[in-house]
Image (cartoon, rainbow, N blue to C red):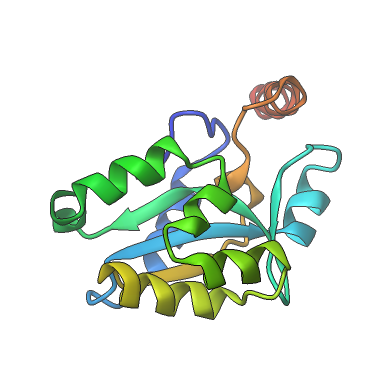
Length: 156
């Protein structure tokens, strides 16, 4: 699944993403983009990064989800979608200590994965994308302009 506002995604990126997901026991593969990859590929993009203890990640807009997860967790899924741009509000769903660790930049991605399993029964795996395009949506005018320029360059 991917959002409709990542215009730079292509088949190579989707195929790479699928290849990163070998474990059928994982309910949700979530692709994030390390800040260095995003800033190198799209300098000045004004992306928002989640500051973990050991890395900064831009939330990706590409996910691979087990088909039954949405049905089994419809309320949670709807809440996460409605708050997808607010990492702190999402973190509150995983408890106050989780929220505090995230707010203080002391949370590790691996803790997020474990807490999602304990708190919701969802086996989540975060994949660090080598493609900045998987997290380059067009929420801000500067991002729209960057994507327009990129698409024009591809067409030339």
